[in-house]
Image 1 (cartoon, rainbow, N blue to C red):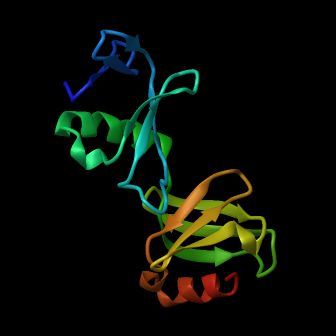
Image 2: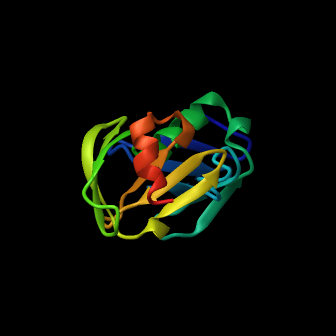
Length: 156
Protein backbone atom coordinates (compact mmCIF):
# COMPACT_ATOMS: atom_id res chain seq x y z
CA UNK A 1 0.00 0.00 0.00
CA UNK A 2 1.39 3.36 -0.99
CA UNK A 3 0.83 6.74 0.63
CA UNK A 4 2.17 10.13 -0.41
CA UNK A 5 5.84 9.56 0.41
CA UNK A 6 6.11 6.11 1.98
CA UNK A 7 4.88 2.52 1.84
CA UNK A 8 3.99 0.23 4.74
CA UNK A 9 4.09 -3.56 4.56
CA UNK A 10 4.56 -6.55 6.83
CA UNK A 11 7.62 -8.74 6.31
CA UNK A 12 7.66 -12.54 6.56
CA UNK A 13 8.19 -12.25 10.33
CA UNK A 14 5.11 -10.06 10.80
CA UNK A 15 7.10 -6.89 11.51
CA UNK A 16 5.91 -3.59 10.09
CA UNK A 17 8.36 -2.11 7.57
CA UNK A 18 8.47 1.41 6.18
CA UNK A 19 9.83 2.13 2.70
CA UNK A 20 10.50 5.80 1.99
CA UNK A 21 10.13 7.43 -1.43
CA UNK A 22 13.91 7.19 -1.99
CA UNK A 23 13.79 3.40 -1.50
CA UNK A 24 15.22 3.35 2.03
CA UNK A 25 13.65 0.52 4.05
CA UNK A 26 13.24 0.69 7.81
CA UNK A 27 12.41 -2.67 9.41
CA UNK A 28 10.39 -3.19 12.55
CA UNK A 29 8.96 0.30 12.85
CA UNK A 30 6.54 1.12 15.66
CA UNK A 31 3.61 3.57 15.51
CA UNK A 32 3.41 5.76 18.63
CA UNK A 33 0.47 8.06 19.33
CA UNK A 34 1.35 11.55 20.54
CA UNK A 35 -1.60 11.64 22.93
CA UNK A 36 -3.07 8.12 23.19
CA UNK A 37 -5.55 8.97 25.94
CA UNK A 38 -6.65 12.55 25.34
CA UNK A 39 -6.45 12.56 21.52
CA UNK A 40 -6.27 8.99 20.21
CA UNK A 41 -7.33 10.07 16.71
CA UNK A 42 -4.69 12.81 16.59
CA UNK A 43 -1.06 12.71 15.50
CA UNK A 44 1.30 9.79 15.64
CA UNK A 45 4.89 9.02 14.77
CA UNK A 46 6.35 6.10 12.89
CA UNK A 47 9.42 5.31 14.97
CA UNK A 48 12.43 3.19 13.98
CA UNK A 49 13.54 0.17 15.98
CA UNK A 50 16.23 2.36 17.58
CA UNK A 51 13.69 5.00 18.68
CA UNK A 52 14.10 7.69 16.01
CA UNK A 53 11.06 9.32 14.46
CA UNK A 54 10.92 8.55 10.74
CA UNK A 55 7.57 10.05 9.78
CA UNK A 56 4.92 12.16 11.46
CA UNK A 57 1.26 11.56 10.60
CA UNK A 58 -1.13 14.37 11.53
CA UNK A 59 -4.26 12.24 11.45
CA UNK A 60 -4.55 8.50 11.00
CA UNK A 61 -7.85 9.07 9.21
CA UNK A 62 -5.99 10.84 6.38
CA UNK A 63 -4.15 7.65 5.40
CA UNK A 64 -5.53 5.07 2.97
CA UNK A 65 -7.52 2.28 4.61
CA UNK A 66 -4.77 -0.31 4.13
CA UNK A 67 -2.22 1.87 5.96
CA UNK A 68 -4.71 2.62 8.75
CA UNK A 69 -5.40 -1.10 9.16
CA UNK A 70 -1.69 -1.95 9.50
CA UNK A 71 -1.06 0.87 11.96
CA UNK A 72 -4.22 0.13 13.99
CA UNK A 73 -3.20 -3.53 14.28
CA UNK A 74 0.18 -2.46 15.74
CA UNK A 75 -1.45 0.07 18.07
CA UNK A 76 -3.92 -2.52 19.36
CA UNK A 77 -1.06 -4.71 20.56
CA UNK A 78 0.95 -1.77 21.94
CA UNK A 79 -1.94 -0.06 23.73
CA UNK A 80 -3.66 -3.07 25.30
CA UNK A 81 -6.03 -1.65 27.92
CA UNK A 82 -8.73 -3.96 29.27
CA UNK A 83 -11.96 -2.07 29.95
CA UNK A 84 -13.65 -2.60 33.32
CA UNK A 85 -17.37 -3.28 33.04
CA UNK A 86 -18.01 -4.21 36.69
CA UNK A 87 -16.23 -4.08 40.04
CA UNK A 88 -17.15 -7.30 41.82
CA UNK A 89 -15.40 -6.66 45.14
CA UNK A 90 -12.51 -4.90 46.82
CA UNK A 91 -10.45 -6.38 49.64
CA UNK A 92 -10.35 -3.17 51.69
CA UNK A 93 -11.25 0.49 51.34
CA UNK A 94 -7.69 1.53 52.14
CA UNK A 95 -4.74 1.04 49.84
CA UNK A 96 -3.15 -1.14 48.77
CA UNK A 97 -6.36 -2.89 47.86
CA UNK A 98 -7.06 -5.96 45.73
CA UNK A 99 -9.95 -5.54 43.33
CA UNK A 100 -11.86 -8.30 41.57
CA UNK A 101 -13.21 -6.87 38.31
CA UNK A 102 -15.04 -7.96 35.17
CA UNK A 103 -13.43 -6.64 31.99
CA UNK A 104 -13.95 -7.02 28.27
CA UNK A 105 -11.24 -9.71 28.54
CA UNK A 106 -12.83 -11.62 31.43
CA UNK A 107 -12.63 -11.59 35.22
CA UNK A 108 -9.33 -10.66 36.87
CA UNK A 109 -7.79 -9.22 40.01
CA UNK A 110 -5.72 -6.08 40.22
CA UNK A 111 -3.89 -4.36 43.04
CA UNK A 112 -4.48 -0.64 43.48
CA UNK A 113 -1.45 0.88 45.27
CA UNK A 114 -3.02 4.25 46.03
CA UNK A 115 -6.02 6.39 45.17
CA UNK A 116 -3.68 8.47 42.99
CA UNK A 117 -3.48 5.52 40.58
CA UNK A 118 -7.03 6.31 39.42
CA UNK A 119 -6.88 9.11 36.84
CA UNK A 120 -9.92 11.03 35.67
CA UNK A 121 -9.66 11.56 31.91
CA UNK A 122 -12.76 13.68 31.43
CA UNK A 123 -16.21 12.80 30.13
CA UNK A 124 -16.55 10.16 32.88
CA UNK A 125 -13.59 8.11 31.65
CA UNK A 126 -11.06 6.67 34.09
CA UNK A 127 -7.63 5.09 33.76
CA UNK A 128 -6.54 2.81 36.60
CA UNK A 129 -2.84 1.89 36.95
CA UNK A 130 -2.06 -1.24 38.93
CA UNK A 131 0.81 -2.33 41.12
CA UNK A 132 1.67 -4.85 38.38
CA UNK A 133 2.17 -2.03 35.84
CA UNK A 134 -0.99 -2.69 33.84
CA UNK A 135 -3.60 -0.13 32.96
CA UNK A 136 -7.34 -0.69 33.00
CA UNK A 137 -9.92 1.69 31.60
CA UNK A 138 -13.45 2.63 32.55
CA UNK A 139 -15.23 3.98 29.48
CA UNK A 140 -17.96 5.77 31.44
CA UNK A 141 -18.07 5.57 35.23
CA UNK A 142 -21.77 6.51 35.28
CA UNK A 143 -22.57 3.45 33.12
CA UNK A 144 -21.25 1.03 35.75
CA UNK A 145 -23.84 -0.81 37.85
CA UNK A 146 -24.80 0.73 41.20
CA UNK A 147 -22.63 -1.67 43.26
CA UNK A 148 -19.55 -0.89 41.10
CA UNK A 149 -20.11 2.87 41.29
CA UNK A 150 -20.48 2.68 45.08
CA UNK A 151 -17.17 0.79 45.43
CA UNK A 152 -15.40 3.11 43.02
CA UNK A 153 -16.63 6.25 44.80
CA UNK A 154 -14.84 5.13 47.97
CA UNK A 155 -11.53 5.57 46.10
CA UNK A 156 -12.23 8.77 44.16
